[in-house]
Image: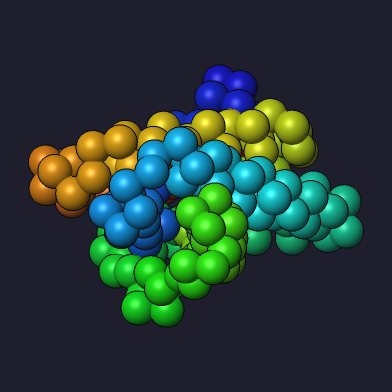
Length: 185
C-alpha cells in the first residue's frame, strides 16, 4: 500500500477518541461555528505534521539504517500499546481566548494539543519509515480531517456513538502489524 493510504488509515484510526478529537468537540460546542474550526484544524495539522514529517525524513538520513529499523519497530510497537490508553482533554487545551477568534483559537489550541501527541509521533515514524514527506503528511492530515470534521459537524452526539475501544484496538493492531512488517524487512 502507498504511504499516503497507510498514513491516512493509521492516523484516522489513532485520532478516534484522542484528545484533539475531544478538543474538536469542545470547540464545536463552545463556538458553534464549524467552518472556521475545520479550517483551523486543517492549518494546525498541516503545520504540525509538516514539522513532524520533516523530522522523520531527517531521522531516516541521520541514523544508520539498522538503528533506524529498530527505532521504527520499537516506535510502532510502542504506539500499538499507547493507543490503547484513552485520552482526555486537558483543561488548558480546551481553554481559548475569545479575543483570538474562532479560527486563531482553533489553530493555536490544536497545534499545542498535537505537540507530542500520538498522531504527531506517528507522522514522524511514518515519514522515517517510508521517506515520502508529501505522501505521509498529506495522508496524516487527511486522517486527522476524516476523524475531526465529523466531530465538529455532529458535536457531542457523535462522541457517544463511537465504539472507541474497538477503534483503538484496530489501530493498535495496525501499528503492531506495521512494526512486525518493518522488523521482517
